[in-house]
Structures are given as structure tokens and as C-alpha cells.
Length: 122
Picture (tube, rainbow, N blue to C red):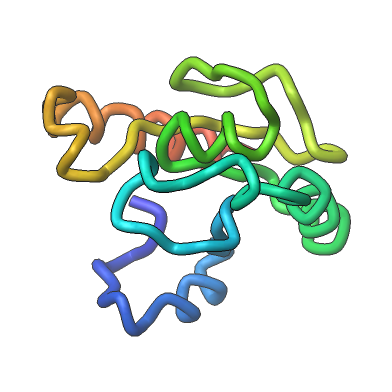
């Protein structure tokens, strides 16, 4: 995994001590990606670029294709993307939403493990 133990939601800021950061591509929280509008991603690409310049992470992951598409206006495939933010590599993971239940858990887990493997080697 990305952390040595499972963290509770109220421990979201504790991920920083493990070299992991969390943010949203959209400015508004919704029940699902289908409720998001283009305006919810206004300025997202620039904000993420600013974060990449300031924090210099090796990787930035998007949980769900719609988060990446909303930020950059491109239709991604799951996996590493060709686009970079400064030197930060981008990776699109499958959505963990129950609405994405058609993708089996084992398949979703495989993508998260793939990113963890790549990130540990960076």
C-alpha cells in the first residue's frame, strides 16, 4: 500500500508523513462524478500545476477518469499518462465509487498496486 497501515478518514492529513498528499481536482464535493459540471473544474489544471511546482511530488494520481478529464479536458486510459506537470508523472486509477461496481475489486486493486509499485521505485 501507500501507507504502512490503513488510515481512518479523519486521519487524512496524516498521509503527509508517509510522503502522500491528497487533493481534489474539482472544487465542489458531490455524491458522484455525474453530478459535476465543467465549471467545477475551472482552474484545476493550473492549481494542480502550481502544487506540482511547489511540492515536487514524483506522482499525482487521479481516482477516476472523470477527475483527470475534468482537469485537463482529455479522455484518459487507466495507467500512467503522457502529460507531466513539471516533472510530476500523472496516473489515472479506476474510480472507487460504488457506481463503478462493474469493475471488479481485484481489477481496481491491481491498478492501485501498479501505481504503488511505480511510486516506490521513483
